[in-house]
Image (cartoon, rainbow, N blue to C red; front, side):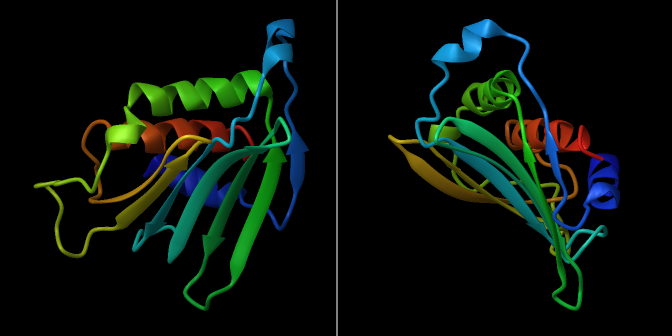
Length: 154
């Protein structure tokens, strides 16, 4: 939740930041339609908070947003390095995103926030939900990977 607080504090109105690559090996980088995001509703930071990485035309972008109780959306978009995108995507692969479905978090309470995930590439797409203040493995890995990446732009 600390990461979510820091994320919300850093959401600026449409600001664009750029992160560059250090590795020449990234020249072979391909987007392959990769996109991963989470949206959390019912948290204490905002009525809605989300982070998305996506890649179109071999240019990775990170978008983060909040929506307040009045429906006011605050969004910022950031170009991220290809190496950073691949690092985040490895966390999604390690979590086995293709095989994930709605979680059964026995620690969740009825009034806990609800996370909705969408992950896709050119070959597959999955959407799943997990409720709780603390998510079980591997759902927590997806949130952590996106939170860490978004935290670089606070």
